[in-house]
View 1 (tube, helix red, strand yellow):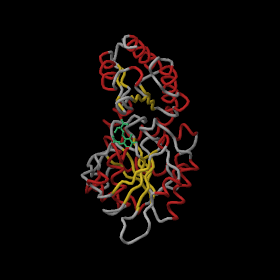
View 2 (view 1 turned 90 degrees about the vertical axis):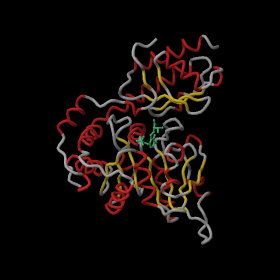
View 3 (view 1 turned 135 degrees about the vertical axis):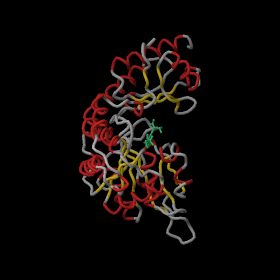
View 4 (view 1 turned 180 degrees about the horizontal axis):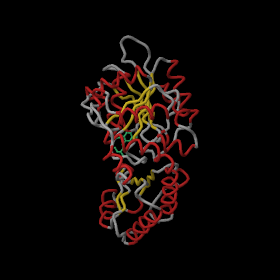
Length: 348
Ligand code: TLP
């Protein structure tokens, strides 16, 4: 059994590093609703610069970032095209309907990666008596499809075609730096055609709190008002932005390690009888595997594993998700796999 808990539930579980905690303690702060927090301003400027955009806005969470952008791009009664396993559709408290008043128009895509043909099929005709498609939202990497990556050319094509049809395109880029690491490309080039991008500082990049929206100056001004409306106007937020700045500078450089560890996890899991996974499909830091043949439900599998100090989350009744991150190393991954192997011996 593992000595300490090996927490593979999410890359959100990482704790701020001593360097981040020092920066947080020493951060220069001001009231960010007056736009006077120098550390928040620096984080926003740096994010805008990295993405080659005019402006950026610090928000408390990825969910608020996505919702803010959806409200900014749409009017109640309009439709948002998104993928069936996507985060905005499944894990954001139905906010796109409950708060933004929009209707999700869902496409089920292989590995979560939508093509333009699939999107085009569900765009509403321009008829006065029909609700209208206002937005397409892509997720890269795609979380619940197993951290899959959109080819950049495909993202460009979707943006170009959507714009031709008068439709805006948002990127839920919670893990866009994982996608960039996988592709060996820069985020500015990858995301240059989107109307808005939301990325998370608090996942693989390691910050304790926060996401950033990036876009044009006018779009970000609008988002600032919407963020306030949603209760996301923060005051001396420099204390958390300080950690975000470190996450942004140092986080992307080490994601490669998380991807290697996820690859190792997938390869070793594939050798265990009863577990089904294709390691060749694991591109980034998310590993989703099928345990149906073990005869255990996801809930029982995870409960028994938790007693042995290894944590994951269910995707559904037969699938488990495990995520590598900066607080687990190669040795932890090996221990986790051995724990699973031992545990299943008594079940097969
Ligand atoms: N994802 C969390 C859970 O909510 C599932 C996780 O553990 O992976 N977009 C994507 C693609 C996400 O994966 C998440 C969080 C968000 C948005 C929302 O970010 P937060 O949690 O900051 O609101």
